[in-house]
Amino acid sequence: MLLPPDLREWVPEDHMVHFIIDAVESLDIQGFSVNDRGSGSPQYPPSMMLALLVYSYATGRFSSREIEQSTYCDVAIRYLCGGDNHPDHDTICDFRTRNRAAFKEAFVKVLLFAQEMGHLKKVGGIAVDGTKIMANASKHAAVSYKRSAEMIKQLELEIEQLTKKAEDADSAPLDTGLRIPDEIKRRVDRKAKLLEARKIIEERYAEARARKQEDYEAKKKARDDQRAAGKKPRGRDPEPPSENPPDKSQFNFTDSESRIMKAGSGDHVEQAFNAQAVIDTEGSMLILGGYVTNHANDKRELVPAVACVAPEVRQPSTVCADTGYFSEEAVTSIESAEEAPMVYCAIERLGHHRTVADLERKALPEAPAESATVKEKMAYRLKTPEGHCQYKKRKETIEPAFGIIKSRLGFRQFLMRGLEKVGIEWDLVTLAYNMKRLHKMESAKRAIMFAVAQA
Image (cartoon, rainbow, N blue to C red; front, side, top):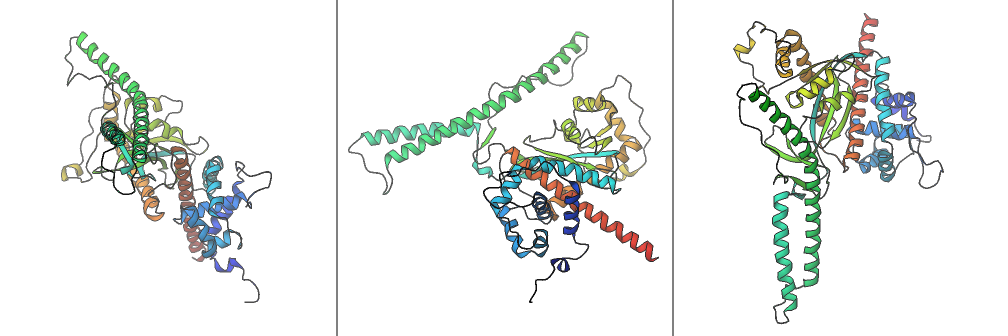
């Protein structure tokens, strides 16, 4: 070949890379962090770097080294990068960690772009859920509060034995290649790390204990008020939180901000983060917001999840969530706001199997009194035809979205460490998911228009 081919001839017209390039260029992102001095390593157009990351994540490439390699061997990515541009893995990684503001700006503008194309409504329902994503750390690199105390005691005993052995001139030597001073230093360093781990666990528990103490005092006051009114409280009296952290409290030496969490069906645990997502339930299945937390459960996530959706993107009319999100305080907080949405949150865990009795039509129970608790009102709301219809949308939208992210995109583990950096990765994953989803909807729309024109 005497002349280089036009790479556009090698990439089909309806390929996703065209859609991503056009979309990124039309977004006009202003929040990029660039080297204004123009010194150092070669610089690349920020829009090209963003398109490269979005397309790579949308096609299951998350490692900066893998993305660098694809700029040489993947035709679509070579076209995206202009043929001979090959950002190295350090440049890609640096761009990814320094431009979170630009990623968030792009996330919102992509959703506004979806509104302009007619794929996203300004007002409608949302569904909230979380999924556990494994951290870049092994659960075997973690130590519990109880185990750390046992290990410190063992190390102190070994340090004492080694010191005595060093002072005893007639003692038998250690194995070949081992020196007593080195062995003592290794144990002293390990003890220091364990003491630091225990300190961090105690600081974390102090914050959690303050919340538990408030809950304990509120429950105790409610039971005392019942007794003062001549009523006998049901169940056991609440117990105050312990002064010391639970024995099973964990600290991971590889990624200290990750946590041991139940994964899958709850029959095993992983070192993980809790990735939250808010999904449109009006048909688009686009992710409207999201963030990452290291809280092992979702009890405190309903309010921040609803708040993470930009007002210009969606004004929620309904909010659906499973039983892990329910708390009377959270539901009241959301529904008491101005132009508040209606919350449909399960209050108990139900099995997936529906019996014949479940399939039979039942009379709607009597509506609860105005003085009923939030939980009683929610139970009635979910049994109404409207409540059943709205809550059904949750599993029809958010579960498939997580399935696409984990199975189609292949994102099952964070590559970076620390809550801030894994948040950047989740921003890119959700942005790539939305781009992929929009491309699919636009392709389907064009196919329908073509079929109508042909008819």
